[in-house]
Length: 219
Image (cartoon, rainbow, N blue to C red; front, top):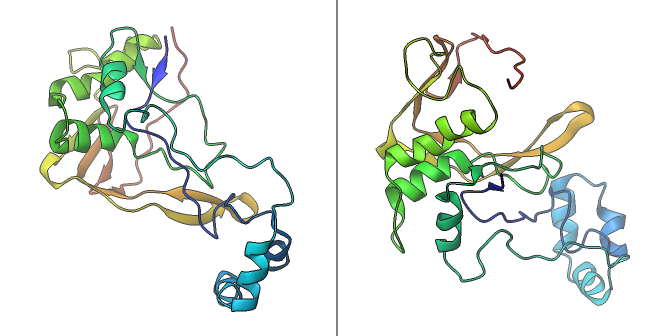
Protein backbone atom coordinates (compact mmCIF):
# COMPACT_ATOMS: atom_id res chain seq x y z
CA UNK A 1 0.00 0.00 0.00
CA UNK A 2 1.73 3.22 -1.11
CA UNK A 3 2.45 5.90 1.46
CA UNK A 4 1.65 9.43 0.28
CA UNK A 5 2.27 12.83 1.84
CA UNK A 6 -0.18 15.68 2.40
CA UNK A 7 2.08 18.28 0.82
CA UNK A 8 5.18 18.59 -1.35
CA UNK A 9 8.45 17.98 0.44
CA UNK A 10 11.11 20.66 0.19
CA UNK A 11 14.63 21.12 1.48
CA UNK A 12 15.35 24.06 3.79
CA UNK A 13 18.78 25.47 2.99
CA UNK A 14 20.56 27.70 5.48
CA UNK A 15 23.89 28.14 7.18
CA UNK A 16 22.72 25.86 10.00
CA UNK A 17 21.36 23.17 7.69
CA UNK A 18 23.19 19.92 7.10
CA UNK A 19 23.36 20.81 3.39
CA UNK A 20 23.33 23.99 1.32
CA UNK A 21 24.73 25.06 -2.08
CA UNK A 22 28.07 26.33 -0.73
CA UNK A 23 28.81 23.65 1.84
CA UNK A 24 31.57 21.97 -0.20
CA UNK A 25 33.16 25.14 -1.63
CA UNK A 26 36.75 25.47 -0.38
CA UNK A 27 36.25 29.02 0.88
CA UNK A 28 33.16 28.08 2.87
CA UNK A 29 34.83 25.02 4.32
CA UNK A 30 37.47 27.22 5.92
CA UNK A 31 34.67 29.11 7.68
CA UNK A 32 32.34 26.23 8.49
CA UNK A 33 33.50 25.68 12.08
CA UNK A 34 33.11 29.31 13.11
CA UNK A 35 30.19 30.32 15.33
CA UNK A 36 27.16 31.33 13.27
CA UNK A 37 27.39 35.08 13.93
CA UNK A 38 31.09 35.15 13.01
CA UNK A 39 30.44 33.04 9.90
CA UNK A 40 27.74 35.46 8.74
CA UNK A 41 30.04 38.42 9.32
CA UNK A 42 32.81 36.81 7.25
CA UNK A 43 30.39 35.97 4.43
CA UNK A 44 29.43 39.64 4.22
CA UNK A 45 33.03 40.52 3.37
CA UNK A 46 33.11 41.36 -0.38
CA UNK A 47 36.41 39.53 -0.87
CA UNK A 48 35.08 36.37 0.75
CA UNK A 49 31.90 36.54 -1.33
CA UNK A 50 33.86 37.00 -4.55
CA UNK A 51 36.08 34.02 -3.74
CA UNK A 52 33.11 31.88 -2.81
CA UNK A 53 31.20 32.63 -6.00
CA UNK A 54 34.23 31.99 -8.18
CA UNK A 55 34.69 28.43 -6.93
CA UNK A 56 33.20 25.17 -8.05
CA UNK A 57 32.01 22.85 -5.28
CA UNK A 58 34.48 20.22 -4.13
CA UNK A 59 32.02 17.50 -5.16
CA UNK A 60 29.26 17.21 -7.69
CA UNK A 61 27.27 14.90 -5.43
CA UNK A 62 24.91 17.63 -4.23
CA UNK A 63 21.15 17.14 -4.11
CA UNK A 64 19.34 19.40 -6.57
CA UNK A 65 17.46 22.35 -5.06
CA UNK A 66 14.05 21.33 -6.26
CA UNK A 67 10.75 20.62 -4.52
CA UNK A 68 9.87 16.97 -4.31
CA UNK A 69 6.68 14.96 -4.30
CA UNK A 70 4.04 15.91 -6.82
CA UNK A 71 4.19 19.62 -7.55
CA UNK A 72 4.93 19.06 -11.23
CA UNK A 73 1.72 20.79 -12.36
CA UNK A 74 2.22 23.69 -9.92
CA UNK A 75 -0.78 22.78 -7.83
CA UNK A 76 -1.77 20.17 -5.26
CA UNK A 77 -4.33 18.27 -7.28
CA UNK A 78 -2.12 15.22 -7.77
CA UNK A 79 -1.57 15.11 -4.01
CA UNK A 80 -5.32 15.27 -3.35
CA UNK A 81 -5.93 12.46 -5.83
CA UNK A 82 -3.32 10.25 -4.18
CA UNK A 83 -4.46 11.00 -0.62
CA UNK A 84 -8.09 10.15 -1.38
CA UNK A 85 -7.34 6.99 -3.34
CA UNK A 86 -8.70 3.94 -1.47
CA UNK A 87 -5.41 2.05 -1.84
CA UNK A 88 -3.09 4.63 -0.22
CA UNK A 89 -2.22 5.63 3.32
CA UNK A 90 -0.77 8.87 4.65
CA UNK A 91 2.83 8.65 5.78
CA UNK A 92 6.51 8.73 4.93
CA UNK A 93 9.16 6.01 4.90
CA UNK A 94 11.95 8.33 6.10
CA UNK A 95 12.45 7.96 9.83
CA UNK A 96 14.18 11.32 10.30
CA UNK A 97 17.38 10.67 8.37
CA UNK A 98 17.36 14.19 6.95
CA UNK A 99 16.19 16.08 10.02
CA UNK A 100 18.82 18.80 9.52
CA UNK A 101 17.45 19.57 6.07
CA UNK A 102 13.78 18.61 5.89
CA UNK A 103 10.94 19.17 8.37
CA UNK A 104 7.92 17.01 7.61
CA UNK A 105 6.55 16.65 11.14
CA UNK A 106 3.99 19.34 10.30
CA UNK A 107 2.22 17.18 7.69
CA UNK A 108 -0.68 16.15 9.97
CA UNK A 109 -1.36 19.81 10.76
CA UNK A 110 -1.06 20.73 7.08
CA UNK A 111 -3.79 18.22 6.33
CA UNK A 112 -6.13 20.04 8.71
CA UNK A 113 -5.17 23.64 7.94
CA UNK A 114 -4.57 23.53 4.19
CA UNK A 115 -6.82 20.73 3.01
CA UNK A 116 -9.78 21.30 5.33
CA UNK A 117 -9.69 25.02 6.10
CA UNK A 118 -7.54 27.09 3.76
CA UNK A 119 -7.23 25.60 0.28
CA UNK A 120 -8.47 28.05 -2.37
CA UNK A 121 -7.16 26.58 -5.66
CA UNK A 122 -9.10 23.35 -5.77
CA UNK A 123 -11.36 21.03 -3.84
CA UNK A 124 -10.93 20.74 -0.10
CA UNK A 125 -11.38 17.72 2.14
CA UNK A 126 -14.10 17.44 4.74
CA UNK A 127 -12.99 17.47 8.36
CA UNK A 128 -14.38 13.94 8.73
CA UNK A 129 -12.34 12.69 5.78
CA UNK A 130 -9.13 14.34 6.96
CA UNK A 131 -9.47 12.94 10.46
CA UNK A 132 -10.21 9.45 9.12
CA UNK A 133 -7.12 9.52 6.90
CA UNK A 134 -4.94 10.08 9.96
CA UNK A 135 -6.74 7.78 12.39
CA UNK A 136 -8.99 4.96 11.24
CA UNK A 137 -7.34 4.32 7.91
CA UNK A 138 -3.82 4.35 9.35
CA UNK A 139 -4.72 2.06 12.25
CA UNK A 140 -6.48 -0.39 9.95
CA UNK A 141 -3.63 -0.43 7.43
CA UNK A 142 -1.04 -1.39 10.03
CA UNK A 143 -3.21 -3.85 11.92
CA UNK A 144 -3.94 -1.86 15.10
CA UNK A 145 -7.48 -3.00 15.83
CA UNK A 146 -7.73 -1.41 19.28
CA UNK A 147 -7.55 2.22 18.13
CA UNK A 148 -8.30 4.61 15.27
CA UNK A 149 -11.98 5.30 15.94
CA UNK A 150 -14.10 6.46 18.86
CA UNK A 151 -16.02 3.34 19.84
CA UNK A 152 -16.79 1.36 23.01
CA UNK A 153 -13.93 -0.88 24.04
CA UNK A 154 -11.22 0.91 22.04
CA UNK A 155 -8.39 3.04 23.40
CA UNK A 156 -9.32 6.62 24.22
CA UNK A 157 -6.73 8.31 21.99
CA UNK A 158 -8.12 11.77 21.24
CA UNK A 159 -6.91 15.14 20.00
CA UNK A 160 -9.03 18.16 20.94
CA UNK A 161 -8.41 20.66 18.11
CA UNK A 162 -9.25 24.33 17.64
CA UNK A 163 -9.44 24.20 13.84
CA UNK A 164 -10.01 27.93 13.38
CA UNK A 165 -7.06 28.74 15.64
CA UNK A 166 -4.55 26.29 14.15
CA UNK A 167 -1.33 27.95 13.01
CA UNK A 168 2.02 26.55 11.91
CA UNK A 169 5.12 28.53 12.78
CA UNK A 170 8.20 28.70 10.56
CA UNK A 171 10.65 25.81 11.01
CA UNK A 172 13.59 26.43 13.32
CA UNK A 173 16.86 24.61 13.92
CA UNK A 174 17.64 23.22 17.35
CA UNK A 175 20.72 21.32 18.52
CA UNK A 176 19.31 18.93 21.11
CA UNK A 177 20.27 15.53 19.71
CA UNK A 178 23.20 13.52 21.14
CA UNK A 179 26.58 15.25 20.66
CA UNK A 180 24.79 18.49 19.79
CA UNK A 181 23.21 17.06 16.65
CA UNK A 182 20.83 19.30 14.75
CA UNK A 183 17.20 18.88 13.82
CA UNK A 184 14.49 21.08 12.38
CA UNK A 185 11.32 21.51 14.42
CA UNK A 186 8.10 23.31 13.58
CA UNK A 187 5.87 24.55 16.38
CA UNK A 188 2.11 24.69 16.08
CA UNK A 189 -0.87 26.28 17.81
CA UNK A 190 -4.37 24.86 17.95
CA UNK A 191 -4.02 21.49 19.67
CA UNK A 192 -5.92 22.17 22.88
CA UNK A 193 -5.42 18.73 24.43
CA UNK A 194 -4.03 15.31 23.57
CA UNK A 195 -5.39 12.23 25.32
CA UNK A 196 -3.60 8.87 25.12
CA UNK A 197 -5.35 5.81 26.55
CA UNK A 198 -7.60 8.13 28.54
CA UNK A 199 -4.76 10.17 30.06
CA UNK A 200 -4.16 13.82 29.14
CA UNK A 201 -0.57 14.10 27.89
CA UNK A 202 -0.57 17.62 26.40
CA UNK A 203 -2.57 20.79 27.10
CA UNK A 204 -2.10 23.76 24.75
CA UNK A 205 1.04 22.12 23.33
CA UNK A 206 2.65 21.77 26.76
CA UNK A 207 3.37 18.30 28.22
CA UNK A 208 1.55 17.31 31.40
CA UNK A 209 4.11 14.69 32.41
CA UNK A 210 1.79 11.77 31.77
CA UNK A 211 3.38 9.12 29.56
CA UNK A 212 1.01 6.19 29.09
CA UNK A 213 2.52 5.18 25.75
CA UNK A 214 4.20 1.81 25.31
CA UNK A 215 5.76 -0.33 22.59
CA UNK A 216 3.06 -1.81 20.38
CA UNK A 217 3.17 -4.37 17.61
CA UNK A 218 0.74 -4.89 14.78
CA UNK A 219 -1.56 -7.88 15.02
